[in-house]
Image 1 (tube, rainbow, N blue to C red):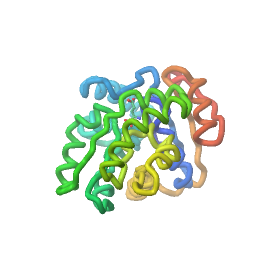
Image 2: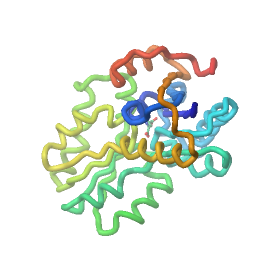
Image 3: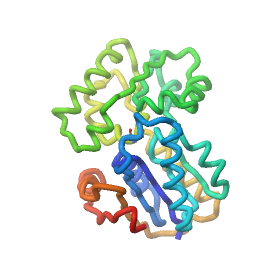
Image 4: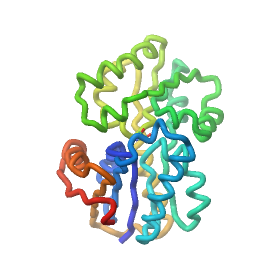
Length: 260
Ligand code: DGL
């Protein structure tokens, strides 16, 4: 059975995991919520790389060959170095959806919601340079948003934060909103309701999982028909269990990452 390691700084990667559950017919998924180190967003690029390297080393020791870096911040900061250091492993990472946003935008104005680390990492600058010529990009470093979602804050707290960021850019004519932090699609409906009819909201999860399936298929490794999900947490397992019930529709058993 193909083993796939998936990690994020916390519950954000559940937006990818729920799409894996929708699309992938079989395999063993080992999901780590690294909530001990949450949030990654305000950390330095080197520190995020060290944390990611530690996680991937452990997956590697357990014979995992496919890794989904279900975190834009870790993908931006660490993916290229992880690929260099673990050349026998296959990585699927997050890339801010600037390309589809720019292609679909009629007003030629798009917003990118992400952490500060994602917006300051080189891969983000690369996608903007390659795909957004002539497009005005409104970069929104949504400080505190991933943390609020991680804490399970309700819409009373989250909605005013989102309105403060989104209303001015919608007013300015933005018609595409790229969610470039995996925590944010967990509030997809709320974001769509604030965006209104004038702006489309892009959740990258379906495209990322299609890419995962292509990679597994290329390895000739795609004949499992039973999906096994195992959840781990580096701290606060109860919070991940609760989030699994809320976002995956099933309360999973959560083990400690130390026990993996
Ligand atoms: N879910 C994460 C991302 O995609 C990170 C949030 C954080 O730890 O700051 O960027």
